[in-house]
Length: 152
Image (cartoon, rainbow, N blue to C red):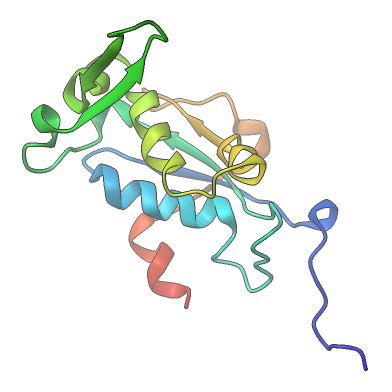
């Protein structure tokens, strides 16, 4: 007996380009909604094991908002590989030095680990200013307040 369900093929996925303005938007809320769209969970044809999500162009990443004391208290650790080589930077330091990295780290934690998550993260294009070089893709403006509200 055949099942009525047909799985989406990654080659025929209908991918759209969305542009998101992150000025005065909370980092965590923006990252969760961006991860939602990158995974493709807003589509009726969502398949968990395939990369059929859409592209996101995030602009004004440097103007993203950190609530509470996260700018001083939240720490991102890395290790140099040498004994005693544990280094850290606060979220405020990363926001002023490389705001793109702060958004990528937040979105990366909300995507699946492994090759699928890495492929989905590559569809995130983030820029510090208000301009981006992806005008040829004709991106659609996306309001983050409606991303999770319309999907079930």
